Length: 300
Image (tube, rainbow, N blue to C red):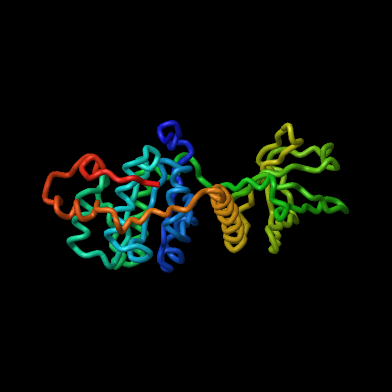
């Protein structure tokens, strides 16, 4: 359950459902550069499957496509029927929403300022979203997003030492460093903290990057000797960006794999009467839980 997760430590996952192109290009890329754990959900039929596995997440929805605005309202209100979905903090993004519709969304949201006007421009939207994430402590204590690469055969680190090139298995990776398992041939090599590894080549998929790393720690584990490496300050921004893109590609693929066997959402949200009921009752005081104020529905 959501209350069993230490969000102050691990932070929160951030989902953008049905994001517009400019949101993907400008907002999401900027948030990832700030090291927020951001995922994209392309279709609303997959949304609940992702969110059920990640309670306590933050959700931003573009309500200008895929469903009508009333249907999107019904979609959000259906969260009240599931305990794990009640923990999701939801915000809507729109440039087409009418004032009367905006009033309904605002009246029946449990969050203040839950509507983001897309016409405000990407710079103001980014500032608004960043403020929301900061207030929610979305990063937790994490400073950088890490990807587990234990089973990734396309990621490796090569180090030229002496007359030989050694393959160091990558265990995890972030935009500032990595953990690697050293081969048996290097087990007797005495390496201390702050030792600089020059001429290292990082292979990520089809791309290779030359870098320099410094040993931050040496650990003996059940897998063998591990080196925790940090990229040196001379590492170029293009190299860091390539690493960051690979990290997010890896964690996104893992997230997609997690719902492979899940049934897609086939609920017809346009047929629900939550929005009509809310529009008729928007002048009343704001209910604490909207689901308790509306006729019952079955959700599959």
